[in-house]
Image (cartoon, rainbow, N blue to C red):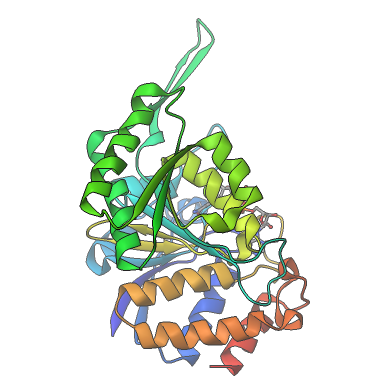
Length: 332
Ligand code: NAI
Ligand code: MG
């Protein structure tokens, strides 16, 4: 039995995590959930934004499934998602996007995996406000070590999964020093993996190429903010935020979570698509070595996605979150 920390999160979080835990129970997955939470709700109840019990649970289990957590815009507390990624050095944010049979989109044949650096760049938290001069600085701190780690991880993943090419997206023409570190790190990694083709593209061109001819991309590696933006863009190419999985991976811990946020516009209405979180949970099963269970659930999910009526509204269907989960369970 694997003990896994479960963080339901905010907004649609509890609805989609329930769908996943129901499907896991029906599939008799040998996972025992240890439920912990963080964010405004836990603060209101206990006075703690990130309860110590959650940190202890993460440190003990080293693997978690996490729902989205709301972060206030502007004033207010710092993102709990970013805090956890930095605290545990979860430097890889791995976000696969692929065309799925049954999901109607404008594109075909997309199968790419985005590696977003997850602890540095403009998310370093180095912000300064000079009231007198009316100047705000946000420092995009990039380190040689951090760049090496994410670039090497992208190449190693490509080699392990039989992928052919790694594309680095950067803005080193303008951000000359911080931008160049990733280019150097990728060149270094590509010496170690000569069978993988390496190319780099400037981020603005990359955006155009992605919406124009996305099937040309295989593994993409990029800095934190660009990765955040590109992953929502890629989600839009393959069916939306409701279907794209993600994982925050470090050398000692992994937290699996969808790309999307807490979706306050549809929270509490049974409209959320649990596919993104379920796919994250399937990634988690592979991570803990439960490959057969991962494939069993994946098959049932793919079969359900083939039938639009059984899907949620974002995919053109009429099913609620729990009805969609029941359709998957029926196919296990
Ligand atoms: P969002 O990703 O929550 O929603 C964007 C749009 O996609 C909305 O129209 C929403 O209804 C839709 N959507 C998202 N997930 C869906 C799903 N599973 N099924 C169907 N439709 C779905 O982004 P937004 O609204 O910009 O952010 C809301 C909150 O989430 C913010 O507080 C933000 O900080 C937080 N957030 C948290 C993340 C995390 O915990 N890792 C990641 C991204 C945002
Ligand atoms: Mg994002």
